[in-house]
Image: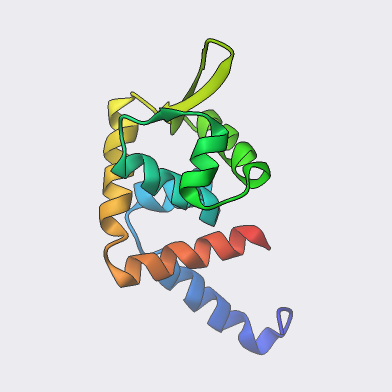
Length: 130
């Protein structure tokens, strides 16, 4: 039970264990890639760094519904992870050109190759969803 005082110490231990990652990455997961859709989008754009496309096509590539992807793209723009431009009559999205953010994205994606890091990232995303 969430309010059970007997589990309070266990919750503290779990939180401490799950927070055991570099501060920069912990902040990135908690504030930028705080949903599974954002995680998918960041990975997609990391693997395709020169992609400039519409939300409709990005949703298709990500295997997600447009209605779910669009607000997540907007959050990533607000977080300086993505850029948004109007090309003709189309709104397009691309990975930020900010070099520091691109390095942080690379650090995150490479860290995700480690199972223990992924478990911690998933933990934080699920906590964010509650």
